[in-house]
Image (cartoon, rainbow, N blue to C red; front, side, top):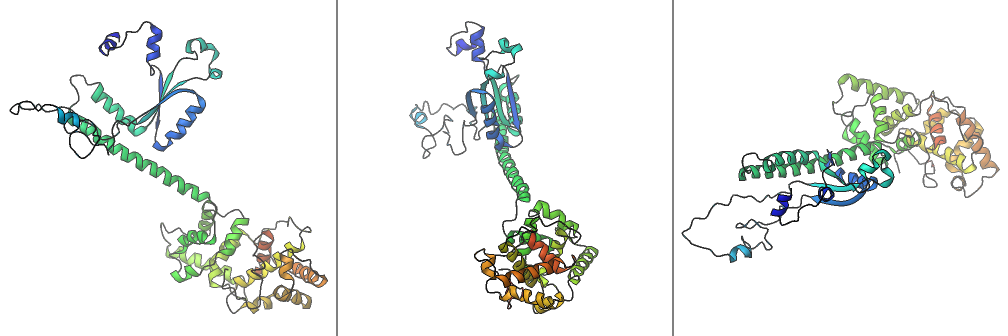
Length: 438
């Protein structure tokens, strides 16, 4: 060891301590990562867990944008000429003298790309039984590298630095350099794959931000089931709100529900049998609201909503007896808007006819459409007068006694859970016909 130091004009070691201080990788750890872009995460953990003496980054020996002198293989400061000033200023010598071929190769790519940390254990982390041997001054090297670069470095080390008979040839170095370039490309692809995969997985858990996001997702399940026009006409506003109050407003939660209902995400496509069965199930749901029919654009959303809020469910209203006038008014008005939006255009009158209302119930029903103060009450800007309060109570009691299998009970339960419209913008009106989602 001292002989090598003398050749490099360095002083020989005096004692064991000097030798230990000069060798930083006498003991070390190599962390090989499958995903290269996790280096920064590991680096942060090392900084947190150890006392870092020094970080050294490897892999900047030469970049592809560097220009190499064709004479001395050095890096050119200027790229306009093929040789550097040093080479061009050297004497040309005898023109007849044949120039010896230069047996060297300057790599184009980064080579061994890694981060090395020289660390010490923190004082509080030193085990007492080996504290004297390990000591607070002992330095260990931690190497952070990708698996691909690690494999390449092992091969390069065996060929270039541990050659038994002779130095590695230029051809071997070129092959190693080419492999290194391919590995750099592979690392970029791995990073991109990791990023894309995480984005897809995280997207599965993210809530639908708006009805368009929900529509895009559901359309993937129905694009071979419906025509393009039918898909474009589907309304998702109510479904989105039902999903939100049921905490199922994400791809991860909604996907299994759709598959349970018989929908297919089109990776395989619908068989004739599965398509017929699904169509029959949807028609049966539509028939359940007779004597009026569901609007075509609400058949599939309603089919999904009925599954999420099943008829057999009988939860107690947590706000029963404690709802404010504004809250009760919002629920009742929302019921009317949802009823109007669910039925087929031109059949709104049949909704009321199917309700079979007595005289006081009929007046209460009409109040939701023509009551002067209904908007102000819903906004909490006005208290109901005696007549308003009576109409609200009569209609509330009527909704509560409806059979759970009826569409009236469905919109009432949904509205009580928080599936509400925005008021005063969405106030129910006699002219409403249910074809608008706005």
